[in-house]
Length: 573
Image 1 (spheres, rainbow, N blue to C red):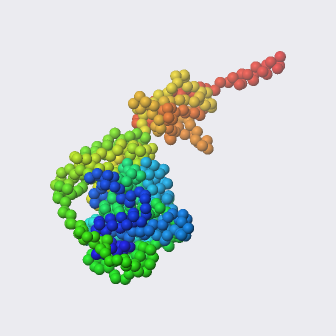
Image 2 (image 1 turned 90 degrees about the vertical axis):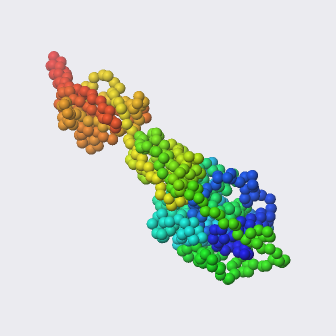
Image 3 (image 1 turned 120 degrees about the vertical axis):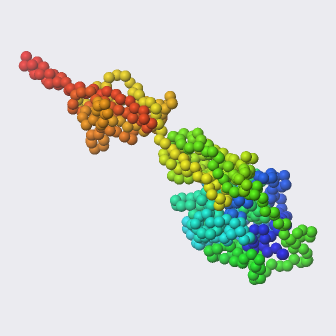
């Protein structure tokens, strides 16, 4: 079969030899530089790359057209080239902006990943032809959804519906969605709001590019290393041909790109502007004989001057790879389950003492090693794993288990959940309920010892307290102050000292109080009231610690009257 550059091909429809020959030709035409594919010494170790089940795109089809063999210099560096560069190096404005914004955003939160925007551009080119040549609106959302074919197992992976058609409109099987072609289950975990509109839309290039960037940087990857970059690309679509194609465009874009208006990007041959990007022909059908433009724009590719073997039929090479035997039940992932995680409860700001643990099991019910598991914090919470990450990906060990990093509670109280899923699969997730409680104190005491007195109609001096929890200062603890009766079962007193709210309203219960960083709380402006006597003030903390103190209100003296009488007598004398 002759090579059909630029034609949309099903995964596995071209041989590894074809891609290798094309990449070799591309490398030869581009002169010295970084290799397009990591050398043998740089390849990932056996078992280090993700399995087919961990692909962000569900291993859906992709475009296999390669960059021009004669790669131009960077725009403006040759007198023989226009300053705008070649058509193939043009990237639509909104698409290019989204890639560069993602690089900047990821650099601010995960600088060690060293994500290059050209890698996003390469994946975007291969997955959707840069969002169908940049057919997006002003917010970066595609003018119509970009959907891959139904992943029904007929020539593609088998992934049954996981989103009830919410993202892909298919309630039977999943489809890859958007310009970066995420399958719904992966988007549910990795979806991002890249343009700040409050939504996570896989059809928006800013959202999709940021999600792709986060996904490629999963774990502790450093994409400046060839092995890590290869692993990241393979985790997106587990195919050697896919890796070579993405690598080709990555190197091509690194040599120079330029911005073109949205909607005017170069489309892969055969890609229309409609809703669906999947091949119109089914498995086994023959592509239309209508000639497609070549990568260089000529209407009909020129035949070689001398006949010879085509890249797809190299001498001595098989025309297709041998079939891969089906995995045995012992090698097949059947699901993940809780591996004995206890209750998840922590006070605001504290770390959860319990660690989330998952076990992957095979088709025989036994443990399965080297399974990629995604842990994701969900719900309205500011809790996060160590390092502030809400999503982490780890791999099961020889016993089939993997333990999530330490989970730390934020300042927001309430319940949330942590979901553990086999990355990139539609297998049921394991959900763990977690709860963040308010900060507590087990003791609270007044810091002074002097008697608290005030004349009727006056105010008491400021009163200070300190709260403790397990013999340490308890900061941020909620405290309630109440004037109580002296009964066996005291209630709020309606006489004596009081607090004053805004507007002058008298109240005898004050809420919304909180201890400072040293566990201290100062009560100020307590009015004595008009009735002399002894009263009680009770402080109660979150956690149940209480302290009662006495407030004495003395009758007002008549010093002022006596002074006035004495002055009058002296004047008469």
